[in-house]
Image (cartoon, rainbow, N blue to C red; front, side, top):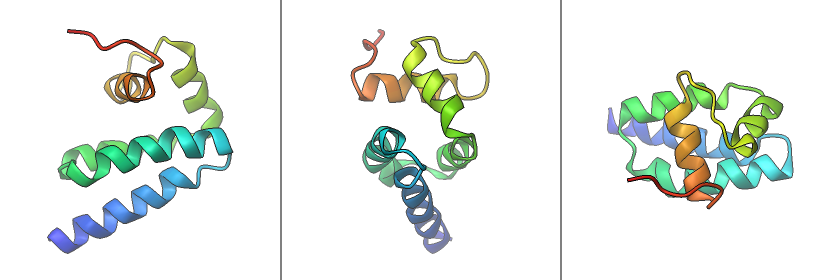
Length: 90
């Protein structure tokens, strides 16, 4: 089971680094490098669903400063904080 998780982590990392635009490759790829190695299965599943969304939508959410209020709000907020696009909240 751990081997399956490692394969999924590598696959998600690859997808994060090969989004289609250089900006998204850097934003999502660097974030993935820092987070994927420690994520449990449920967090990885959440990120895999996130990776299925189109770049223009993700880029708009990341740069807008107002994450969508649905399923990915926590992930978008963490990406923004990671890249210092938003301040950490207590």
